[in-house]
Image (cartoon, rainbow, N blue to C red):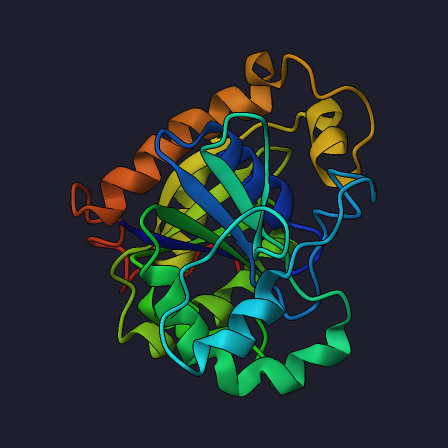
Length: 261
């Protein structure tokens, strides 16, 4: 199965909300893994603290030194259900950003465990920075990396050096693309031309649904019919197609001159 990584340039781009929307509409069994060194949000956000914390990422890190971890659900397991389908699980991340430095040496082993699961894995890697504790191995080895950004000049400017960082980590920009969060700003074509990578999809500015996913605010019923999840369903299919080699998302763009910044 495939490992996908989502990352942001920072500035509340909406990467965790986007990762949740993708996981909740993913066409195959999936694990959403919270790999953000700043800490995980799902337990306190979507579940508003009402779900008992599983062993999560730290449990995988502890066991991964002895070999690939077969992640499990249920009492004492690593995973928790993301919904009632039984096909969508999540791996809870760090509860304290101070844990990130100690986790840094374990990322290669964690990556191997994530990539070896018998289902797809979407890794929410949070903001990409140059500091200690980043999940560099996950970003380097993922079958596809998508940077979630808004269409503002500020976000595009922040994304540019981070796209360069991804190119260094991965030896190029093959299988790197963008997920745009809609709003006022520049067009997808302008942003793609400036950053040198293709756009995989656009997520609508659906504040009502985003509030449910990010903070557990409101009812979870009928989420499938809301604009954010409808768009995520389409974007997920495009991510899967790109990861499988059905689209060269960076073709013809890597050497483009920037036109916005």
